[in-house]
Image (cartoon, rainbow, N blue to C red; front, side, top):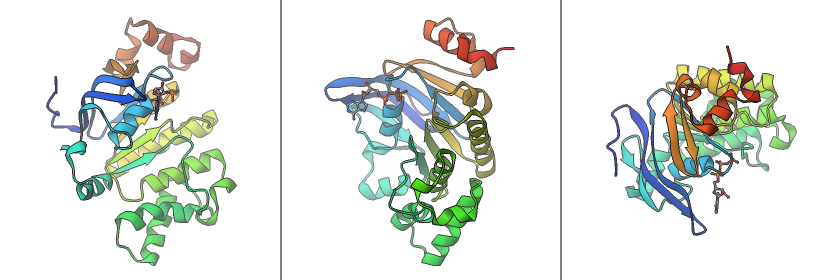
Length: 257
Ligand SMILES: Nc1ncnc2c1ncn2[C@@H]1O[C@H](COP(=O)(O)OP(=O)(O)OP(=O)(O)O)[C@@H](O)[C@H]1O
């Protein structure tokens, strides 16, 4: 059954089914992302978190159901309407997915070239502002991704995701591969950006510290279905075996007390 998007929903996923290679990966999923929140998407490995994110941003087709972004059903849009809608979101893929043959500056400029009609000098200027926003020095602009640390790659990819001043950020495991201090700083950066740029954020994560430090709400998936949606406190109070193990297991010691 399809649900009407709540007024505050920036993303509303209704009865989503995604079938890949003949297998139902997402199986009747419902959840929404509310304006201004940072929503953490969790679940066991292979439960369909990345597929869900890719289906929302139109990189994977869905078999049935509705993905409504900013009040529009993405699947029903024309090509030019999709281009317009895509300007409203930025995506940070796992491992950053920067173009290795382009400098950081060129990577950040890439979405601007695709979507905006800016002069080269204005593009350069905007790219420098985005670099500054994510806490990278101006000297990083001329470097290639292979010359950056893992943390710098994440920040550069975040700068690229912010290139078009999006309303929504989609982040796929943003702190994976970062040391705990770097991961903590990245969480802080996401919260600061959300607050200063009025962003709404959907973050796929396995990182319990990120859930505690950055996320307002959490959606848990299992086998492509919604397990539970709620706050960290509500998740921690759940009796569901996977949620109990996840939120009260040995790795959850920072959340205790
Ligand atoms: N393009 C594809 N074609 C076929 N199957 C796919 C494709 N992409 C993902 N899958 C399958 O879909 C399932 C869910 O994958 P997904 O990457 O969404 O999991 P996840 O919850 O993000 O896992 P992890 O936490 O390990 O990153 C997996 O079984 C995966 O093999």
